[in-house]
Length: 124
Image (cartoon, rainbow, N blue to C red; front, side, top):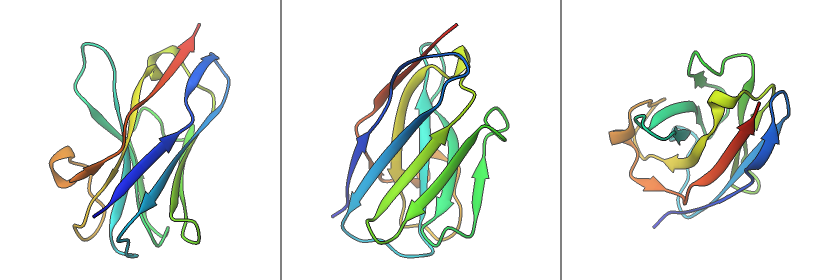
């Protein structure tokens, strides 16, 4: 069984930074992907960034490239999402997700384990 505990989030101003953390307990493997999704009001849940536990492959949504960084701490089984230069359009509930599929995955249906969402609100 895999459990994901998310921390971080909050209310910030445009241009500020935040870091989200996702502590994972249970099975992990270097070839399994982790991801951060977000769900804004009135929109579909979308993938923000994905990474293999090995850390050697990542992928980002175009809207966050150059501003967000996903990373892993394999010692502590934690995945991070560093969010810089935040914009009001980044306001959403952010979710951490884990998959047992091989390789990077960007589809919601490929992720079977989810942490509780954390609210990120960016004021203008």
